Amino acid sequence: MTQPEVRAAAARGLAAARGSAAAARGPAAAATLLGAALLGTAALAGCAQPAAPAARPGAQTSDAARPAPPVAPPPSGGADPAGEGELDDDAARLTQDEVARVLARVAKARGLPVLREVRSRVLTRGEILARVRAHVEREIPEGVLDHQREVLAALELIPADYDFTAGMYRLLEGRIAGFYEPEDATMYLVDDLSETEAEETLAHELVHALQDQSFSLGRLLRFKAGDSDRLAATHALVEGEAMSAMFDVLVGSAFQMDESTLRKLVAMSTALSSVGDTPLALQESLGAPYTDGFAFVQALRRDGGWASVDAIWRALPETTEQLLHPEKLAAREPAVEVAVPTAAALGPGFRVVFDDVMGEQALRITFAAYAHREAAIGAAAGWGGDRYAVVQRDDPQDPTRRAFALAWRLRFDRAADAAEAGKVLERRFGKACQQRASLGPLAWTARGSDVAIVAGPYERRGGGEVSAAGTCAGAKAWLAEVMKGGVGGVGEQAGGATGGAATAEQGRR
Image 1 (spheres, one colour):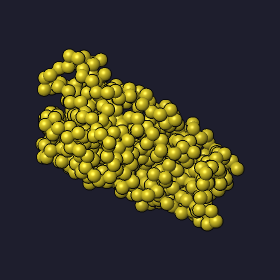
Image 2: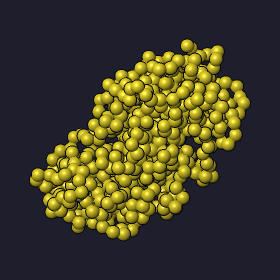
Image 3: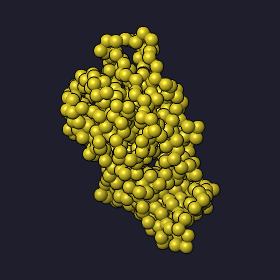
Image 4: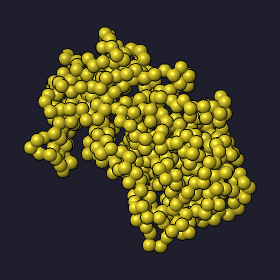
């Protein structure tokens, strides 16, 4: 297969696979939390709207290239999309022989055993989306996605009034091709896939089925509060392996796909398939598990073949830093423990309602919204540990009125790394505290190896109105409190300011 043909197949396969798998059963890291909870179980279709299944003229029939069969039509009258009732097996599933044939090809390419058959069901887009919604509601604790929206809004990664959960569902509805669900060990596919899309979706999703049979994906990817960075690393391994094995099946060898080309294809495909108002950070987060994961798995395969990948499943990366830096994985370099930021300086009524770790991958995606990609990668590469907290104050007189704010404390490997991160923050937010019209103040400081950011408070009212509810004077006091918090079991290290934006001298009121 020529390189243009490889790239074309890769582009189709990427679009079919992106967001697929049984992966993140909860949000991954803050920027990958951007939609992993919604898209981690779904396969997306190609850049063009799916067409009715049609036979391809002159299709090859060798075992290595034989396409999967077109998807069977849905049953007339449909079925309850989120209910427990069974669909008509004859009308709404691929035959087991067809799935078994493709499964055997995938198992041979990946080198994993087939321990049991993989059930398949075919549903309409509306039915698939309803099942994904039910999955999210079942797996993600109430309020988590709302709190994550506040993280994104406070850092200006999404507009203040953007409903990112609804936005991701809008994106998903038009692009979904199918998903694999570990809970019932079933692969679900959309009923309007073309023959090529069905082939690509099957190849990717059946890798996930084999992963589940050998490594129990549901257990590994279950949501756990405060564990997003580890989950993001596992998510990337899951998707990177599926991409690598999928390319082996589709184009003969994943090593025909250059990793930098893959990143460009992912970015282009994601942009083309995005709804017009989809923020860039959301788009970036969709591709990160696939591109970072693919690079990770390819490096493992170069070193020791699929056996090296199998070994990683027995000792998973603990952070996205380990995923992105092979030398840190080899050393099993741990993350620095950072205390949950407090909010006493904001006054009575404010309490921490959600906290988590961003991790290097999410930090890089965040910085990419503020600076050029290469600068963002360099600034995030010195990450050592972090912890952020969403704080909230309720109005006892008006239950529809709430105030929110964000505090984020980071520890870098060296003071020079913290200074580099400071340059990215300064480029976006300036040196002095910003008093934002709707989101309230934002202030940051870098001192020694530490960086801290505070944003808000701001108020949300029942109708969706967002308005500032704090001043830079309050932000400065809160920033000082956050910087006093413990890092790595010890207090703040002394060091000169490297561009701090919220000192008493610099803060604007």
